[in-house]
Image (cartoon, rainbow, N blue to C red; front, side, top):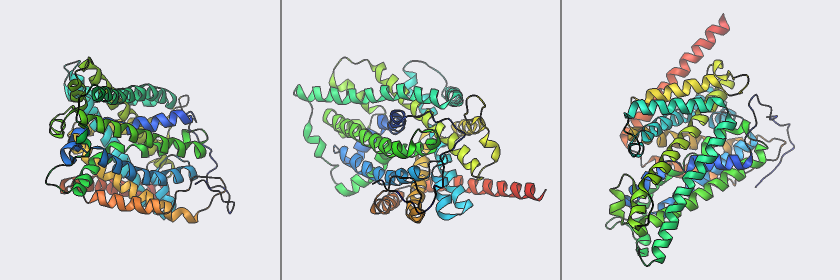
Length: 445
């Protein structure tokens, strides 16, 4: 619950060079839009293949895991409302520039890698329903457009997010409404929603499927990196964060129930567009292109919000001396971190031409789990750091359970995913060493 301390003056005055243009409702839609990304349009089938008809169970478990870590973000962001997210929290908690850099770099790498994967998804089969274009050039052009919108301004980006979030939410709600009508017409098989995959322990099946389901909920952490651009952030942020996660969870549960009532798990698991097949199976007159368009909007929205996060994270890390100070350069009129936007966009473009969507997605999950562990440990360490301003305080048991849940999910990852994430973090250590060497040379000169 919110708490205040008057033991010390505030460590953060709230001053910022960035424009505070994000209102409470806009932040809610920002988080909701990032959570309700493209994953649910493809992952419902994969979850059903692992757990059976009870798709809603691993989705509910994943929501619980996400809410545990969200509590730590709500406390730390309302306590230290600065761009940089987990990297800033780690620096304050442990005072280790290397550890802070690695956490920030893991978050940055996950964000840029996710955007690269989303660009490939955008250029794939859903776009093919409208245009026949080469995948990689289309993906690169898509990232360029995202970068230009990001550079134009946070207000313009948030305005686009509001429209795209409403579209993607409408598409998911449509699935639930059509399923309800399908059931009321006497069709569908409600008993499937409590059936698990035969021959597999339900607990094992749920845990395995929860890893995929958890991927559908990640994205809420992105909002920590726009803290400096939120009005009245200490009051607004916790409400928007928990509200968006709960709304996303309710929508996911509805979609999960709807999908398995209409189609058996086997059919869902074999489909690359399970929700489109669900809509088709109802027999109602919904054009196929409608869902293709909704999926494209969901992908574009996820990529936009992810690149906003990556550029603001790079800006925040540079402002803390963890990355070159040049990345703090801001456009005079737009007040957006233009060099950070250019750099993160270029890196995403490189990843787009060097990795597949599956490889990129697996790496994102593992990197984010490390970030979440660091954030949950940091919130416990920083309890000794008291500030004057009232801020949200999560119950101590929640970050403890969050750490355990992250370790549990890490144990489900494959060796190949560990290797790819390790190589990325190794690259981060090299970049950190080069940066420190350059800093020493400049100070000596």
